[in-house]
Amino acid sequence: MRMLTTAVNTLLKRENYLLQRHGFAQTVAQRTNSVHQTETKVPKIPPFSYSPPPYDGPSTAEIIAKRREFLSPALFHFYNTPLNIVEGKKQYVFDETGRRYLDAFGGIATVSCGHSHPEVVESVIKQLKLIQHSTTLYLNHTISDFAEALVSTLPGDLKVVFFTNSGTEANELAMMMARLYTGCNDVVSLRNSYHGNAAATMGATAQSNWKFNVVQSGVHHAINPDPYRGIFGSDGEKYARDVHDLIQFGTSGQVAGFIGESIQAIGGIVELAPGYLRAAYDIVRRAGGVCIADEVQSGFARTGTHFWGFQSHGVIPDIVTMAKGIGNGIPLGAVVTTPEIAGVLSRRFYFNTFGGNPMCTAAGHAVLRVIREEKLQENALLVGSHLTRKLTQLKDKYELIGDVRGRGLMLGVEFVTDRDLKTPAKSETLHLMDQMKEMGVLVGKGGFYGNVFRITPPLCFTLPDADFLVDVMDHALSKM
Image (cartoon, rainbow, N blue to C red; front, side, top):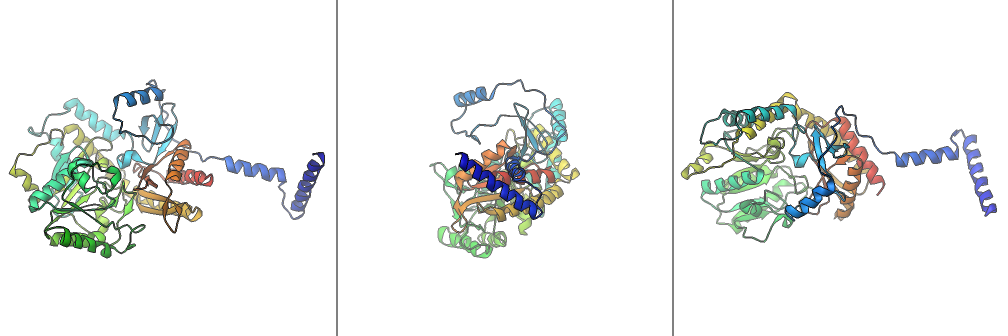
C-alpha cells in the first residue's frame, strides 16, 4: 500500500511540474478543488425586497392528512414532497418556512399581473366594502364597465360579453351558442386539445387522460397540426385538409363550428402549424359553421406579440372564450361574440348566478388596467424572447431536450430520450421538476405523455428571473 501511495504522489508531482513548466500556475490540488466547487455551486435566486411574516398555520403534514380525509381522491400534487404555498408576491411564492420560489407556472397561466398585485387587491377590497354580490337582475356599473373595456381589446364585431366563472363554463356556453345559431350539432375539435371537463367540453377535449367513459357525442377530432410530432411537419394547409374530410365524410356536410386553442396548453404548449387556422376557419365557414377561439390560457397579452393568441394567426373568430389570466386568480371567465350570434340566447331564459359578479368583474377591470399601465405585453415579448433563446441554447447542449417552442411567456420544453424517435422522457421530466423545485424554481408539466415543461409565469417575470430559471435547469440537467 505504501508503495502504491508513493507512486500516486510521484505521478501527481510530475503532472504538476509539467503544468508549471508550460505556464499553468494552478496546482493539481487547486484544479481539483475548483472542479469540486463548480460541481456543487447552485444558482442563486435573484434578490427580492420582500420577506413574509412567520407562518403560524397548520403544518404540511396536517394539511395532507385533512386533504386525504376530506377532499376528492382525484386531487393530485406535484413533487415527491408536496409544496405548501402560503404567500405570493409578484413572480414569487413562499412556503411555510418562508423560503422563496420563482413561480414559472403562474397557477397554470392564471396569475397574469403577479401574485397579490396591489391594484387588483385594492379593487376587490373596494368593491367588497360596497357590495360583494347582488345579481345581474339588478344594475351595477362594474359589469358593464368591464365589458366595455374588454371588447375594446378585440377586433371585428366581437362586441357582446357573457360572463362565466371558469374556462370550462365559457367553452360550454360557446359550443351551445354555436349549435343554436347554426342549427347543427357537429363540432370539429383538434386531437391533443383540452377545453374543459364538463359534458360538452369533455367531448371537445381530445386526450384520453382527461376523458371519462361517459356519453360524448357530436364532436369530430381533426389531426393535430403539431409541427414537432405531426405527420405533415409545419405544413398547415395539409393538416387543414383533414378538417375538410371530416366534414365531408363524418357529418351531413354542415357543422356547428370549430373550436381550437391558439396554442395548445395542457397538450404541451403546441403551436399550430403556420397557415393552419386560417385554412381551417375558411373550411368550417363554408360548411356553415362558426369559429371559436379558446383563449383561456393564451389570452391577455401572454404571447407578447399580441393581446390575443389568435391574432398571430391572422384570423378573426366568431366567438372568443377566456378565463384564467382574466382575473389574476379570481374565478372569472367570459364569452365574447357578435351581436347576431349573441341573440340566440334570447330565445329562452339564460341566467348565470355568479357570472358578472361585481367583485370578480372589478378584479377583471383592474387586470386590464395593470396590463396596459405596466406594459406587461411588451415585457412578455422581451423576457419571453430572451428566455426562448436561452432555452434553445440548452437544447443545443443537452440531447434530452427535443424541442423548445411557444410565444412570449407561454413556452414549452419537451424532453425525449431519443431525438430521432422522439421517445417521451416522462420519468426524467418528473425528476427534473423535483430537482428544480429543490433549487427554488417551479414549472408546470403537460403534454399527452407528461414530458413537457410548461413555462407560463406571471407577466412581470424579469430577465434575471429568466436567467435563473435556465441556470437552474442547466444545473439539474448536468446531474442527470
